Every structure is written in structure tokens, then in C-alpha cells.
Image (cartoon, rainbow, N blue to C red):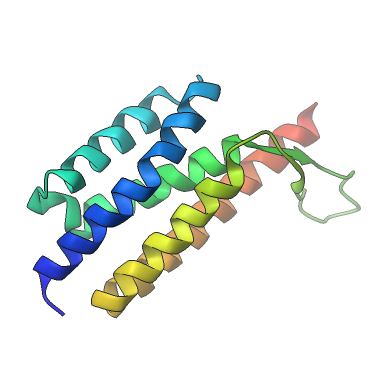
Length: 144
């Protein structure tokens, strides 16, 4: 598949997905950097800017979407037992976590249809980002 097709599919994705993030950002005021980058990325995708379809831009957009999703979740951490690492368990959605999570999965699927090797690297990066953030959340909850 051509890069032009990826550009077209990303523009359709942005048209469907951006309103969800606009709503999330109207509720979440603690993510100014992620909001600014994602709003800019959506604008670049919609204007078909070539940089928006490159792997570094896609990776950053996906990391920001994971951060937004995790910011809209409520976590609890059970007491850590002798030598085990703290764990952050999801206990609720504060509004917007589900569409943000779906946006991540949909974007990975879309990229995979055009560039499977890049999608695989990006999926791994998403998993690492989520694991790192959850470990940070669990550690913060344990300190409370």
C-alpha cells in the first residue's frame, strides 16, 4: 500500500477521533503538553503534512494517547506483599479513557494495514509506555 493511502486513512481516522479528544481535553486540564501535541498532530494529519505519517510522529501521538487514557482512569493499589512490586489496578473510568484506549488500538490497526513492521514497533512502544506509567502510578499510590 502506498504512503498516500496511509495519509488518506490517517485523515479519515483524525476526522473520526479528534472530537473524542476535544471532549476529553475539556474535562482534563492537567495534560497541557499532551493536549498541545495531539491537537497539533491531528491538525497535521488533517492537512496531510508528510511528517505526521512518519514513525517518530506516530510514536509520540500514541504515547500521548496512552498518557491521556491513563489520566482518565482511576487506580487503586493493594498493599504490596513482601518483596513484590506494587501494582496499579484500574477501578474506574473518569470519562474518556475508553475512547482514548480505542483510539490507540484503532491507530495501531490502521498503521498495521499499511506498514506492519512500523506498527509492530509502535505496539511494543505503547506496551512499554503503559507499563512504565502504571509502575509510576502504583509507586505513587504506595507512598500515600
